[in-house]
Length: 438
Image 1 (cartoon, helix red, strand yellow):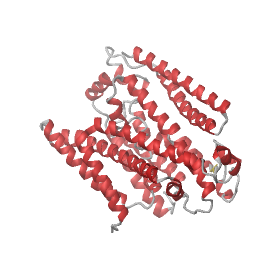
Image 2: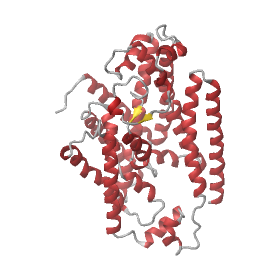
Image 3: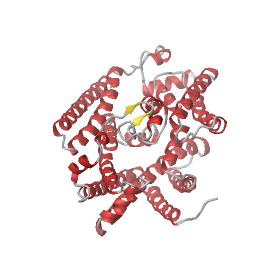
Image 4: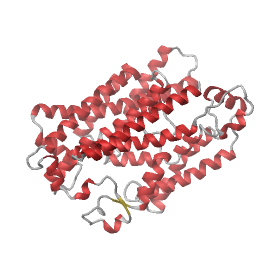
């Protein structure tokens, strides 16, 4: 059953309030509140990091470097058998990654698993924002800014606060609780309220984005085409608001089923493992159809209980990385098999899609050969360069900011300079591709 607690009541209240303004404001309102809430959340986390690092027992950045072991500041983990060295106090301890984990995170997860905000091949969560931008270039650059802000800027206040917590609370068993302890012990009353507002802003921003995104799927992809095609816009708005509140209730129920937030996102990653490749290849291969995507979404739910109950794998904990790889292999075999066993979409539908999207490439040659009047997109080489440059740009921005924080200025500014240079390369390639494909 569901245990009613003060925490659950608080979460329900926040969900209700967020759902209320999400239903009234729509995408434009959510975009504005997201931006405002991002500023509040970043301001609060930066203030906490400053108070933590300036604490007399920490001694500033220099104190962090003196009181924590040198390997704490290594940006790259070593790869090996971490299980055999789990009690090590050096880099082979917490900073060591198993070979399986290295393959899963760096070689598989980023392209295989669907995750809100990081959907391989595109998804409604990001597409909503991209399609509301002024033009194609603005949408891509805005998405790139999200990657920089999300992966390079936002983590550092948390990292600094975590380093300070290791010094101030060395014996705390629940390391996650030490962040709240920093807020409780270091922040004066006024700023304590700001930190609480920062936490609420981050939570509410996530809930608002999820509900608006989920509602758009249900209304635009289910209700409009299959249930009520002839309704007016007023009816669609009414249905979307009702749907938003239904999603809130479902989300609240699901919240009660997880003890740790990490279990929730690991479950999402595992249950979406395999769909990512379909979402990517659908733009480059005409043969992929709706059954390809449907089978890729269903396949993980078949193998998950087998891995957990037959092979006794701890799917959401110590065996997560191995389970992820196995689910991807299984899902890929399933959707490829289903693709070839089912009929492709009709030539009429494929030609309509090609005329609208004109993806180009060898995977669409069967369709493009019958449509000489439609110019397929080119510049895939530059797109590949942009993908690689964008990944390195974000990584170097992350490292550069860290080096500057820890007073390694020369190395930090070199990282930042390379990151900025790669940004110009991406912008140049985007302009060239857009001009060629007009």
